[in-house]
Length: 143
View 1 (cartoon, rainbow, N blue to C red):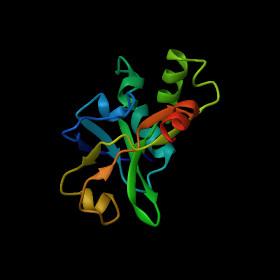
View 2 (view 1 turned 90 degrees about the horizontal axis):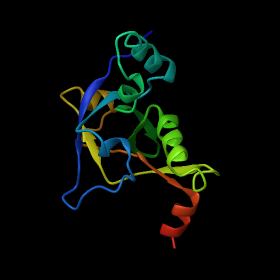
View 3 (view 1 turned 120 degrees about the vertical axis):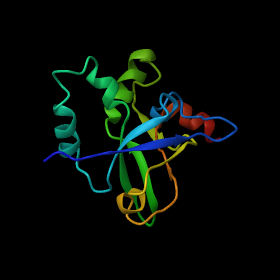
């Protein structure tokens, strides 16, 4: 079964974003899937674009899913994290050799009137956790 997304507006703070080239730094809107949507359902949604999309990965790099962050409010994460991880490794293989760490990059998003239902009851913008950094970068910034 295919999921149906909604389009959410990316909100960038006045001081700017710090997503380290994350998904929300590349576009004004994200394609957001409802809390509880599985990866299989998201894949089924994008399958219908395979034949006509010139760059399916570019579409997928705008895809996000709302996930539980219990006991706190839900967060928004890239649905296809591996595309961003692969891009980072391609640009700087030595730094990302050991993998990396996902965290919030400072941006938020909000949707239309269905937002509260889709987020499990939150009627406010959610944090986008789309900053991917190497462990070396994480350690340097954590000191």
